[in-house]
Amino acid sequence: MRKQSSGNYILGSVAVLVGACIFSAAVGSAHAGAFAIREQSAIGQGTSFAGMAATSGDLSNIFWNPATITGVEGTQTQSVYSVIIPNSELSNIQTTGAAASGDPGQVGLSAFIPGSYASMQVTDDLFLGLSVNAPFGLATKAHHNSATSFHSRTAGIKTIDVKATIGYRVNEMLSLGIGLGAQYLKVRMNSFPLASAGAHAKHELKGDSIEPNFTAGVNFTPWEGTDIGIGFRSAAFHVVDGTEALPNNTVTNVTAKLYMPETVSLGIRHRVNDAFTLMAGAEWTNWSRIGTSAINGSLANTALALEYQDGWYTSAGMEYAYNDKLTLRTGIGYEFSPVQDAHRNLRLPDENRFWASAGFSYQWNEELGFDFGYTHIFVEDAVVHAEKTSAPPSSYRADAESRVDIISASMRYQWKTEPMFAGDDPIVRKY
Image 1 (spheres, rainbow, N blue to C red):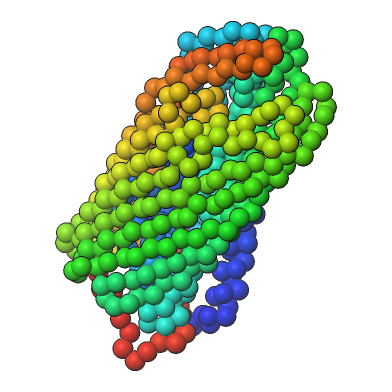
Image 2: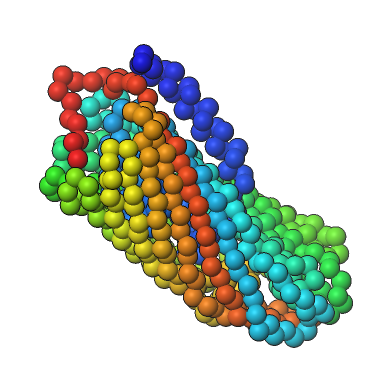
């Protein structure tokens, strides 16, 4: 097969990534802690994302650690698609002051999460990459006749993150990486505040923002077959410009500060033999930096009360190379929710959760490969509550039972190219 030119590859990659940006508008529910979206890799989905910050040869690792791009030889593109199917039900509902008391129905909404990656090896040790992801998202909706609608009818947070990555392989033991980009945030929330009147006059808040962010990471290979990676994703400090619509048809311009938190990821991979690989990971997210965001200019004295604590996620998994074409994998994880009992509301009835995952990869030929992953998340039972003290006052309390199913698939293509400026004796990883 004739080798593709680097120029043709770049044009094709840009087209793929622009398409991914368009599809990313469909982003919905969050299914990591709070409203983070961890579903950025079908390979990682199959292991509950164990060891994703360590180099494995999977291009989607760069979401967690940009230094891992040095493990992707040549030129590669990858597209990832995930479907999140939540099930959140409320029971033992207790209300005061609300004119409606119907069943809120299915609160969480299913979501389609796309992601795309491209990488190119410039020299034996220098690598460039481009990625489009949706790192945060939230989509909940209660039935309009339920008492929950007076506190939260719908809630929507969407993000698109575009990032350029550069990785450098210092030697066979050490690789460094950094990614620079921008994050787009769109927020929309509404409720029906006139509980005593029973009138569904809507209070709506919506706006958007674009802010810069970055990633940085290091990968260390102490000996053949073992990789240890640490990755950092910076916070994005959004100032959302939008509007607030009140029940009396008054519309006013508002602004609000809303910070998307930084994350530190640790990944470890160890190849036991030619068939078995073990991996483990840990992740910390600085959710406590968010706090309560005042809505400046709000005539209703509205504020976004997100008094979260820091979130933690740990995972462990394994891979089994059945043959040269088929690789099987599985993994488990446990997440400590950042949502505290005193601040758990109807928009996000989150609690600690246990992950169980399985997946496989199939290498169709030398260039084309497919990956599949499935996760079932067992969410601990939670109590949600809300209280509105302004006239007319109302309150809401309920028990929340939640579970989540996630299906991910990806397609990888290894282009027939050489490094643009290859040396005489390139370093090639053989493990």
